[in-house]
Length: 371
Image (cartoon, rainbow, N blue to C red; front, side, top):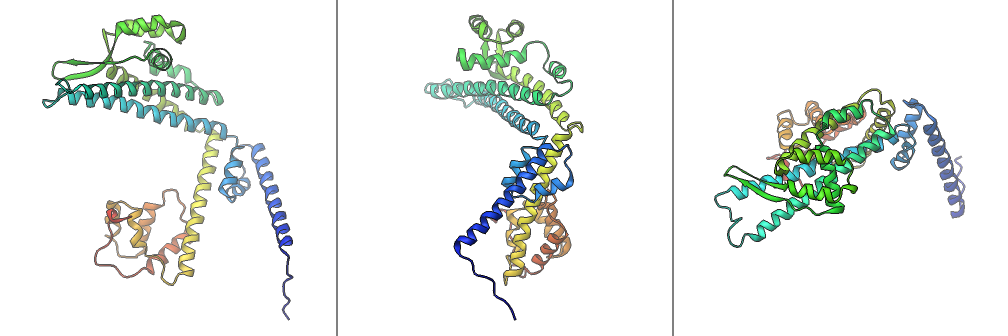
């Protein structure tokens, strides 16, 4: 004879939930302490314990991983680098746009009424110069923070090798101090014949500003040497094309060093984060496909949704294969599953989902038709 389960009051249920939450919190604390004291790479048992946690708790615990301090500064450094690259590009594009406009036969730049266009262009160049100089200084600071938490062998010597000793680097960083704190320099345009137009800062102006605010500038001798060696008009395009090349050489080297096998803690941290992301994605898709296949009389038609995830070129390749064949499904998975979340069980679900899809419509959907 079957026995009925005892009925519980609302207070008793709440007490049980509270005890369960306390046990889970204690387990998370145990995992956190284990992570904080673990050598790298962390043991597989500990890695699995983190991967199984809710993402919020896993992220909090991974901040106690030995590789987290370097990863945090590495990520900030890479963001700062991307911002600097974008600022440089925006400045150079702004100068190129000015050149194309002003050298055009249809240009109204210097005609009556063109003052507004001229003023907007000059303000844009000034804005981009301000942003680029600030981004350059920010990148220097983030690079130093990165190097401080985990010294990169050869960092200082490589910096000198890439940036040189002619004072260009100090000049660019000095521009940030001048523009941000001391003097709102206004670059002027310079047109040379019918083939070149750019924006420049007068050498005399730079000497006067640097001389007036010398106490507020770091690397003053190098800045002065660079200005002394520069022509009468310091061409912003030439300056920042040169600086971009040097910056790319140095920061490309830094990124390669961070990928070296010697940074064991950093790579173990990255690997754990990647594994956690893959596990979460796999769990999500298994929940979705399991629900569709078990609970829906007619599951969603995957063909209708493919244009949301694939490019038109990829769709063309997919539909060269027999409809709903394993080869077709495998190709779809290869396009969508960049991290390797699809295991054998999930692949089998995908086969079944496609196999149960409705017959082909007269015209298959295109990527441009997706919502």
